[in-house]
Image 1 (cartoon, rainbow, N blue to C red):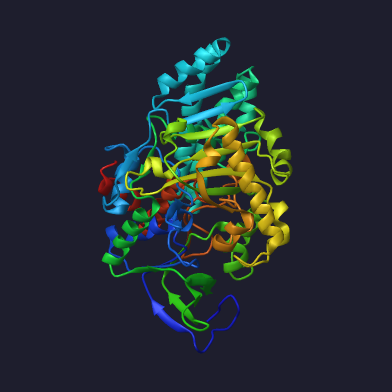
Image 2 (cartoon, rainbow, N blue to C red):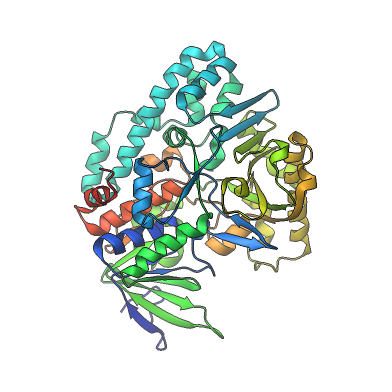
Amino acid sequence: MTTPTGTTPAQARVEHADVVVIGSGIGGLVTASLLARLEGLKVVVLERHFKLGGFNHAFTRKGYHWDIGIHYIGGMAPGRRNRRLMDLATGGAVDWHRLPDEFDVFHYPDLTMRVPSNPTAYLDRLVAAFPHEREALEGYRADLKAASGWYTREFATQVLPGPVRQAAWHLNRRGRDLALMTAREYLEGRFRDPLLRAVLTSQWGDYAVPPGRVSFAMHALLVLHYDWGAYYPVGGSDPMTDAFVAQVEAAGGWARPDHEVSGIIVEDGRAVGVRAHVKKGRGGYDAEFRAPVVVSDAGVRLTVERLLPTGAAPKLAAAVEGAEAGVAFATLYAGLRTSPEPLGFHGENHWFFDDPDHDASLADHTERLLGGYAKAGFLSFPSLRDPEATQHTAEVVTFVDEEAFAPWRDTEWMRRGEDYLKVKDTIGHALIDLVERRYPGFGDLVDYWEVSTPVTVTSFAAYPSGGYGEVAATPDRLRRRLAPTRTEVPGLLLTGSDPCTLGIMGAFMGGMFAAAAVMGPRGMPRIMRAAGAA
């Protein structure tokens, strides 16, 4: 047997399954759920964190409850394709609450734009605010659809074998030139007004790459995703995780936290299982989980650099080596004494920007933030969008330079020292002030708060960049097709956001493509028929 270390501990326990999934994020759980439900396979899901869910998990402090990654999702109206697919993977066990009609609000020094849940109404508002750009705005929707269509067709090739997928790339030409521009290149070529260009890319935090770096395809996909509004799971992210796991367990599989995978076992060039350390009792124990299929939801970079034996996937390693990571974030989690509704909040998101040039703002934002002033941020209220919430909460997210947190990269959670706590304290006050400047009285509502940083993300998700994606949604990523569902190692597949895109539904689609690839040529049609989404 050949393992990443070349040896197998004599004391390692061995368990067998049909499929092993590394990581319990949305991608991993969706893959496991679909394979269990549609194929009856025994799937085991191994999670290094002490709680299942990946970025889609929640935590509680002093009675206050927050979700880590989910803020809002499009396409969850009853009968929509995304909703049907979600209901298939969750067994229909998750209810969805619709956000207010004006689900996003963009704040700039000279303009506030409220985004309605109707693309025609939104276009009308944009034309009213920028009448001199009417003609350009009317052509914008067609370009969004062309670029998004190209990207969607590119997604669909994920389930194809390598040579066939390469041929599909050459056939999929319509919209490609638009798709492979940056959003900034596209917008500067179409719109003269810099403030309008800023407004149109206000949601760039959702794809974690500023307009000067993100592909127009990614931008288009996101904009169209929120046509007809946004939704939130009733009860937050935990019911989603529970529903996915229930499907896995019904077929004899399981998903467990505190199972840290240390390596993928490769024999005769094929992935046949993983080695893991199970954190249980004093010291825990080592184990092997053997299966003919291994699916990694750990991220392509981590999979290549830490889990695979050296040299096992040279093409994938070469592609990942030069890949850009997405922007890292810091988040304020605030518990509120009373409802924020009297201040004018009703469950919508608020995006705050001092500077309409998003790329320029990114350059000096971290320095200003660590000095106590936040130039930009995203505000949401989980408690106002969840009918089951019992305490009022808020979250404020802002982008940061991960390098600023380098001194604490190798420190342990909750043991990073006074200097780190002072930095978090400064960030927390700056983010409270960011909201207070526009909504006086917000600070008085805050009863409890804490801050997460990029090193928090690294501690729990093991992402070296400290962000939500190790392979950014750039044109270069699309040209080089950096993280295919099918890898060059037989038996090893990738799932989650890297093969597709960031966000809950991006990771969901990654999970669906991985499940379809395991199922074979009939996989995708079968999934779509089962969901009634064909």
